[in-house]
Image (tube, rainbow, N blue to C red; front, side, top):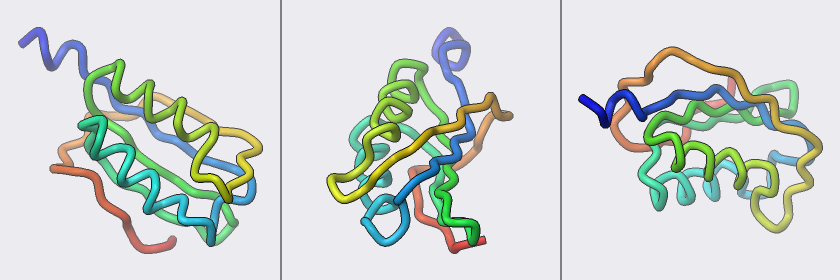
Length: 97
């Protein structure tokens, strides 16, 4: 039970040059390495949106990664909000919305 108490879920919105630079693929790889569950997708407004769930240190590490992104990305800002628990298995790329 203590493990679930240490789990957190965060909703991220990443702004900047973050589409067309392998941001989603790179985030998926980072999340899988960290053991974070959830998803990532592009939005039509040019941002990238993600939901990350898992152990607090792992989710924080992914948030820290999101501020940099892959080498070609130019992240301007990352909005982070608490979110309801996510029942995702693994971490996936989703279609643009």
